[in-house]
Image (cartoon, rainbow, N blue to C red; front, top):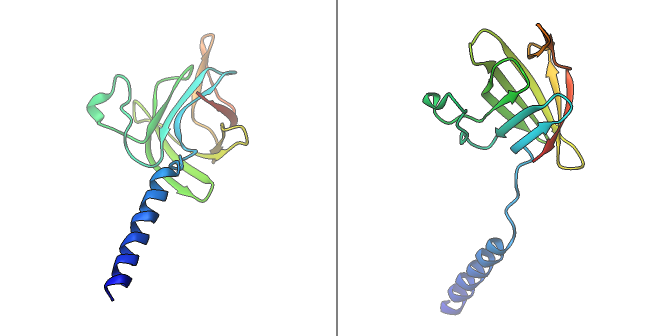
Length: 141
């Protein structure tokens, strides 16, 4: 009986050591991503609220934000990961508009972005605000 308990303890220690040696899997929905064509940044962490939005630190940590060459900063208000797809709900810094987006991993480590139910996110073009495309590609930085 003592040998059996010792063998179980040893096998548990060996399994723990093997797990510690394996690299941790990283979420495809964590990091900084850039759309170079429209100069839009997407900073996200779907696993935890760990990102502070520049200029809005009083809000505390969130799951991310979108900024760059768009009108205002769009912060993540909720996110849900199902399989290989993540759905993010964004709201602009004024709280007037919101947008749901779907992100799917691309083969090269980037993300494919798709606006759900139309698009509310706009960018300045000259003296006008125009909507960004409903489908974009973001490269991982």
